[in-house]
Image (cartoon, rainbow, N blue to C red; front, side):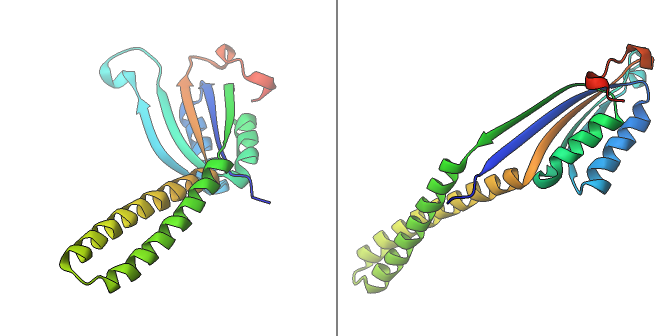
Length: 178
């Protein structure tokens, strides 16, 4: 039986009156406790532009898929999450189809290499070399796609949107979290 290949994604919106402290909690969970990494981080501080608005931050993090459920539970408990979303995409069929096509392309490359060794005329050699280059490009493309899928299967993408609010009474966490 084939192992299921599933890409998971999640998102959380967080509203907090403790902006700096909650960002530290989030980074600690991601980087220290769950071995994840921050792919992208941006912060907006309107006070730097002379505006009397609240700060916001956007984090795009990747968490090992085998611990993402626990990470999300800890996040929901430790910071005021006001909305959440989780999704998954089953790519099992596409993954194994690509793997089979990759093996076929490698077999073709091996055959072309043997044919090239037996080529007699310059024209035959040039023609076989062109086919070898095409097969190599196709193999590299398929290997790249499989590596990309493996990365997305093994590390779940979690999008975090953190909004500062004036005081905690404005925050209505879902499910009574924090």
